[in-house]
Amino acid sequence: MIAGPHGRLALGALRYAAMVAVAAALLLPIWWILVSAIRPGGEIFRYASDVGWRTLVPERLTLEHFRTMLAGDMPRAVLNSAIVSLSTVVVGTMVNAAAGFAFAVFDFPLKRTLFAFVLLTFMMPFESIVIPLYTLIRTLDWTNTYAALIVPDLANGLVVFLFRQFFLGIPREIYEAARVDGASWWTIFIRLTMPLSGPTIATAALMQFIHQWDAFFWPLVAASTPELVVVQVAIARNITLEQANWGGLFASASTAILLAMIPFLLLQRYFIRTVTASSDK
Amino acid sequence: MAPFRVSPWIPALFLAPALAGLLVFRLGPILIALVGGFTGTTLRGETTFVGMRNYADLAADPSFWSSVKVTLLFNLLVNPFQICCAMGLALLVLRPTRGVALFRAAYLLPMTVSIALTSVIWTILLEPSVGPVNGVLRALGLPPQPFFRSEDQSLATLILVCTWKGAGYWMIFLLAGLLAIPRELHEAAAIDGAGAWQRFLRITLPLMRRPLAFVLVADTAINFLLFAPVYVITHGGPAGSTALLMFEAYQAAFALLNHGRSLAISTVILAIIGVIAVLELRLFRAAHERAG
Image (cartoon, rainbow over all chains, first blue to last red; front, side, top):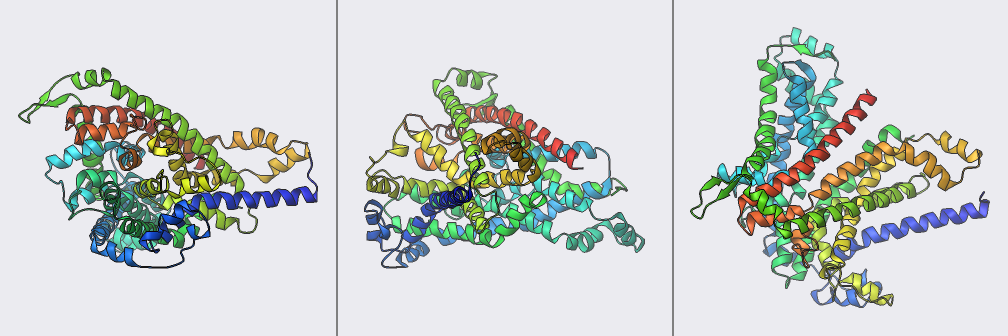
């Protein structure tokens, strides 16, 4: 079957119609949550049953739900998530980059075995060890501490691998020159290698940040007291315990959605480009 | 780069923090699960060796087998379904015409919503009496549905919610594979008179074997460990229809306070994930050896 110019035009229009329909199915749920957070409490569910243009476009706007949210556990949860995520990123990047540096630059006994071990750890998702990890943390007497949330997530096999791949590309001559000048390996790592690794550091930091920011199962198990509650646990708990406060729930859910989405919208070009890079011609 | 030969102390110091972390917090829990599966807790709170009892109890427990069945059924359905949706999306946005970059990014947005938050917002959207999804169904003249409240619909609803979040993410990996297929292959086949469907079956699918295998294995690892939606939305119900294994392990540890049982279930989960990990490692090695 060979399509004529009219057939091809119709096919193109059909393709755009399908793309729009899929986008609507994927994005309207998020949109509805976001607009519900800024409409008066009485109208949130009214136009969910009485479907019309008002379902998606609020007539009157209010920030009352955000005021409710600020009075609840959400500010503390955002602060805790920020503390946990940022300290994981800062310490984790150093720890994993140092290991990646050793695998890339040095020859040492057991190198292949240790590297295979690193690879295997990142094939085992963190969630698969949550229950026995809890037993370990309880033995260490770390339950309900920041350490329980941060320390187990610092070393990350995938990040070690990413750094090692990047460091392998740095020419040997650079290190030889620095060694002749009498620099120690630690100085070389901090002053020479790391400053050359901006994009890899950014990728690694983003990966560790997202893993911590989105984590739910581990914080729920390891540290869920009000002082240590993180964003994901706080919101999930609000829906299971106090469904009366819908406005506050919509405001906190919207805040969490936007906090994760804005960095993505800023960086999505790079993400899509990194994944499709080698092949997009 | 040819690696430097130095005193072993230097690489040891660079490696120590990361390797210690991986040993203690990755390998440690695996050993704890393996050993702990053979222990029990007495009424006085002492841990004792009980041999195979936890596993024998599991094997004799119909609720454990029902959870295994639900987990297998869920994975047999959700993984192929997500991959078909992701493939459909990738084919839809493959040709780089005007505005397509925007749609590619739009399809990725649900990925930024964490799994816990996904569970929360879909609990509200699918609420049977006041939720907007049933509002839309009513407006279209269709009967409202119970979704997560019905034993018959809960697992299917869970699959749809997971697909809403995951399809765009896997789309990107498949899109990368599709973009790598040389255009000339399709053009030559078209000249030979092969239709679009023929070209998809004979050219696209065979060349997509590796990306499809990667996505299948990675997606299965995630879905085998699914926990948040079960915890937040259904608590395993109605009537155990969504009681995935990870939730069973959680219940054993934190509701029944039976640590031996929870560690035995964890061992079962780890064994399954271990098999998946070995498959993944093979694919990964093959891909990297080919790349250089």
